[in-house]
Length: 170
Ligand code: FES
Image 1 (cartoon, rainbow, N blue to C red):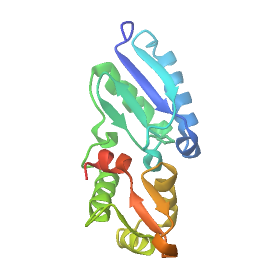
Image 2: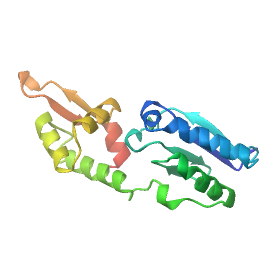
Image 3: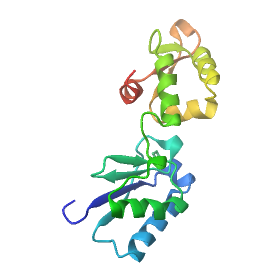
Image 4: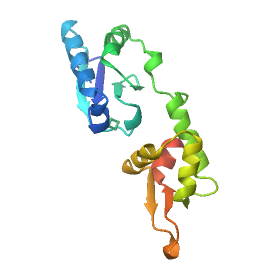
């Protein structure tokens, strides 16, 4: 972005919106205006970035940073960090962020020994990792898993899609 130091994209799609994303973006825009930083911080909303269960999410360019679980109370600290060229590590999404690590561990287990298994077995595996039916439904909505009728009228199966395998490297 040639006229700004940082470009902030704030997801305001449905799940992030349900978790308060509109309050986050409003606070961010007010903070940028209050500090007269419009020429340095460019703020836009965006659609889902597939981190729906840990939103609200902010993407920061060119810093290569995603902040997840952001609240309006976090905004002054985030803007302070942007002004100083620093990163708020406690909000930064990394492969080691507990929610991210848990999902990767689940998908690694779910594709063993193959990407598809009976739905009941898939759900039982999820339950061992405290991932409930709502979480499974969300993964399906996002296209990370696909439900299919079992062969020859057998039990329904759940397959981990390429999207999820690519996302979690499993
Ligand atoms: S709704 Fe924000 S990441 Fe999906």
